[in-house]
Image (tube, rainbow, N blue to C red):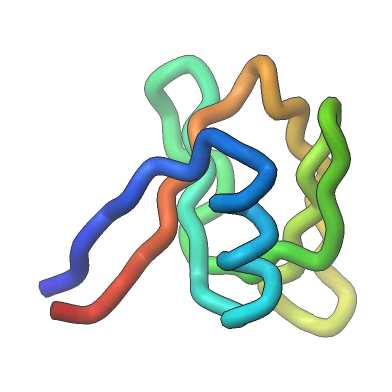
Length: 71
């Protein structure tokens, strides 16, 4: 079972980026990205990658981001 920790601040996103932890992304109460890593982020956008050719761009204001950690 994994722990979910919500990513809110730039520090949270920077930590997930540096550690390469998998994240989940929700938009309008639907999961839109199940298991990917953060490639880059700024104050408006978070870019995630789940495979070599799969990049997704998420608006920070429209999405919720959760860090997945093993118990």
